[in-house]
Length: 202
Image (tube, rainbow, N blue to C red):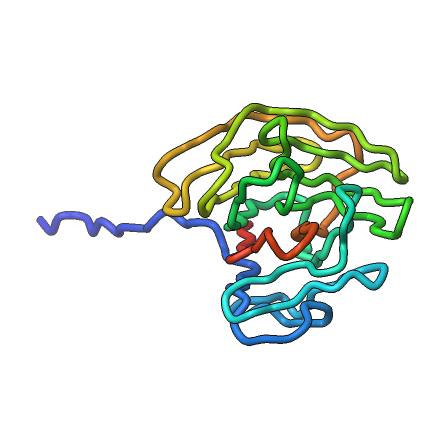
């Protein structure tokens, strides 16, 4: 009797939607991500200057913490965002990841950003220009750090790792008070904060 055939079906993993390692040089606005994209490009707002510099992107003319997002449409409000950035010793927030972007105009911003301030890692939710700040706890102030956000509508699981994603500095969950959208991206205040890599999975 012939034994039955057993077929191995590997588990499916997440699909990489967006990956930008910020190779090359030039402005971020209108840029197509480096290796994977869904046909959409980066958008910047209000004359904010985000500049790509051979492996990173910085902002150069935003001097306020009440700052603006550079974002891209990922086509879904359920995704995992991984943002590798360079932390620094400044007590003001410098850069991080943004989600739920629906408006990024001056004084009327509507989005949530996850970044570091003097109070530690935090979420700042801007609703028509008004800010709601939630502090989550301390993280390192120097070196390369990886922000990972698992977004499912208004629910967000957040983690901050070292650059190799092996050491967890902080993790938890947060429910947004603003509506989730398909747009996410980065936020930077000045050139001291560098975003090195940006990935979105679904």
